Image 1 (cartoon, rainbow over the protein chains, first blue to last red):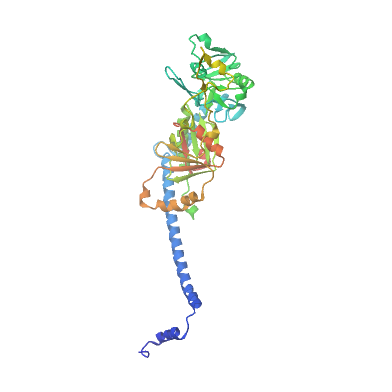
Image 2 (image 1 turned 180 degrees about the vertical axis):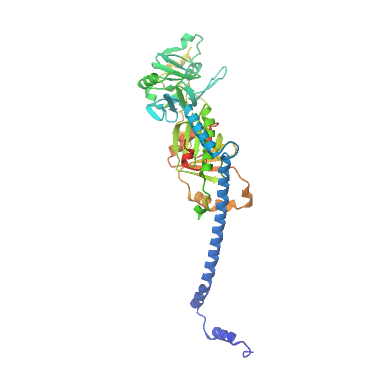
Length: 248
Length: 215
C-alpha cells in the first residue's frame, strides 16, 4: 500500500513520521500564511467601509444641498431673473435699513441689568440699572389678584416724559406691605422716590430715578427700570417722545 | 476626495439665497418685537429688532445632529426647562416674631399683619446652561455649555453617513442641531433672552458666500 502512494504524499508522510514537529516553525508557517489573508480581509473591509461612508456622505450632502436649494427663490422663473434678483436684494437692504432708528435709542439688557444709549452701532453711554425681580405677588384675600414683577421685553417707544415725577403707589404696594388699600388717591402719592425724571414706555412701566442706589445692578424692581441720577439726566436730555426702547 | 465631490454653489444660487434671507429678514424687521438670527455659517446667534443687532453671541461650534434645514423662519415653541418653574411662585408670609426693623410698622389695631417677603430674584447665574429649544415644525436645538464630545464627533462623521444609507432614513426626520458655547454665561444669557413665541431665522451652513447672508 505504501508503494502505491503518490511520491509527494509519501514525502509528506515521512516528514510527519520522521521529523518531530516543532511548534515554533509551524506557527511561523501558519502566520506567514494567515497574515496576508488577514491583511486582505481587513483591506477589503476598509475599502467597503470607505465606499459606504463615501456613499453615505454623498447622500447626506445631497439632502443638505436639496434643503438649501429649496430655500432659495427660483432664478430665471417669471420676472425673477438674475439681474432682477440683485436689484430686488438692494431694494430689500434699503427697506430694512430704513426700519432702524435714525436717532438715538435705548437698549436694556435685563439679564445683566445694563442699559445702553446707542446711536447707530455706537454706544454713547453704558449704564448699570435695576430691572424687574420676576417675583409673583398674590393678593391673600379678596379678589386674589396676582402680579408678576417682570420688566417687559420687546420693542417699545418713549410715550411720555415727566419732570419731578410723583409716584402714585399701586394696590400691590399696599398689599405687599400688608396695609389696607387707600380709597383716597392722595394717600397713594409719594414724592421724591422716582428721582428727577421719568420716561414712560407704556403699561405703567417707566425708566426713572431711585433712592435705592445700593440695589443698582440687581433684579429688584416691580418692572420699571431704575437709573442713577446722572445717567437719568443724560437719558432725559437725549430722549424725546418716540425714542425707541428695546428690552431683552 | 470629499472636496472634489462637493458641488460648487454658483453665483445665481447665492443671489437667490440672499434674496430669500433678506425677504425673511424684512418680514421680521417690519414686525414689532425681537427676533433671532442663528447663523450656522458664522457660528453666531444674533438678537435683533428692526434690522439692528441688539446682542450677539459667538458659539464655538454649531452642527446638525440629524437632518437639514432650508433657510427659513421658525418660532420657538418651548424650552426644555420652563423659567416659571424655576421661580418661587408663592409669596412667603413673614413670621411675626422676625427681627425686622420694620416689624413694628406691620401692626394695625394690635393685630399682626402678614407681610410679603419676595423670594430672591433669579439672576443669569440661575439659568440653565444645557437645554433644548423646540421650534415649531419639530426642529430642535440643543444648547450645550462645553465642547463636543468625541462620541458625538464619531457619531456625526462615522455613524451618520452609514445611517443615511439605511432605507428608513430616506424619510426626512425633523432637523436636530447642536450649539456649543465654551463660556457657560453665553449659554445662560441665550436662555434668558430667547423666549417662547420669539421668531428666528436659521441660516444653515453652506448657504453660499458668507457675504451673501451678512446684512
